[in-house]
Length: 102
Image (tube, rainbow, N blue to C red):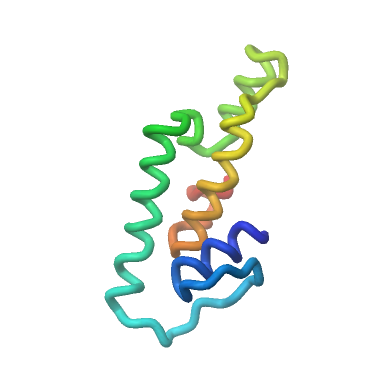
């Protein structure tokens, strides 16, 4: 939860804080439209240059790691997957079952 709070504070308020804040209606329209896009671009760069395994919903990758990899997940993926989900949710992206949290 701290990562989501950090991402929300950075994207919407420009401050370093892990406290969870509700994004209210006092933001300009351009910010509400562009911040989810910026978050998506950051995640795209993470997937392109970090690890392609952060793509997807998580469960297929977890099952593959159990069946094929001896229940081991690469440390890079273990760090990038929750960070990418926090950036997506914190920048205003989806958090429904079809989003990064599933």
